Image 1 (cartoon, rainbow, N blue to C red):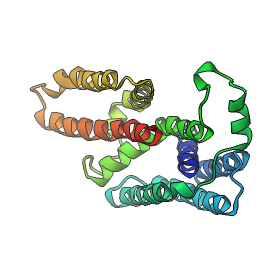
Image 2 (tube, helix red, strand yellow; image 1 turned 90 degrees about the horizontal axis):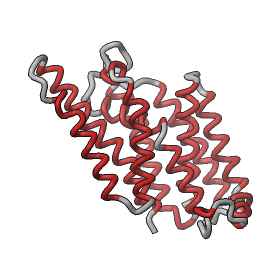
Image 3 (cartoon, rainbow, N blue to C red; image 1 turned 90 degrees about the vertical axis):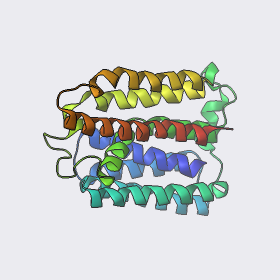
Image 4 (tube, one colour; image 1 turned 120 degrees about the vertical axis):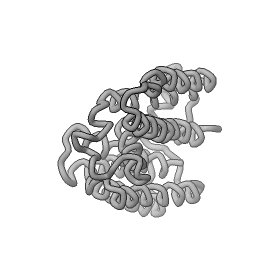
Length: 244
């Protein structure tokens, strides 16, 4: 699972960097470098691991470049296809990945925190990746799916008429929600996580049932439902990878 974890870390760092300072090339290069350096520090220096690190770095850079090209329907399909194919291949090749060792293994051996006692280094690295992708990457994936499916008019994405531009709280609520669901899942409280999901729908129900401006309400309802389900799938998918 170490290759999957590094791929997640690289993409997440690139997206976080771009959300902080949206410049070309730099965030994805930083993400690729972080993935490679983390892999080396974790003892992934066998030939197969080095080759995997090169591929991971290339995918991270490719992800960043294709995402920053725009969120039109055609452009959005490219990064989604890239990340989808890459993750399928990474899962299939996961058994060939070298074990996580190096500094991370040494650090965990000293039991730095009671909650980390007995935690496997591979699982710890995957946990870091799973947490990071809940932040900016989750928002990017939601917008890509919305644009690729035409849920939001591609011409309006990023403009003043973009629902996500008007509803800016979702940019913060989304990461908080995903991290909360991931934490509850890791704690074995999936029922509580489902309550959180249901509560979000109930909070938006009065607005979505508003009588005035029904056409706008219908667009926002579709936007809300598609965006929310994509957002929820990210922490749930991460829990599947972390399941033992």
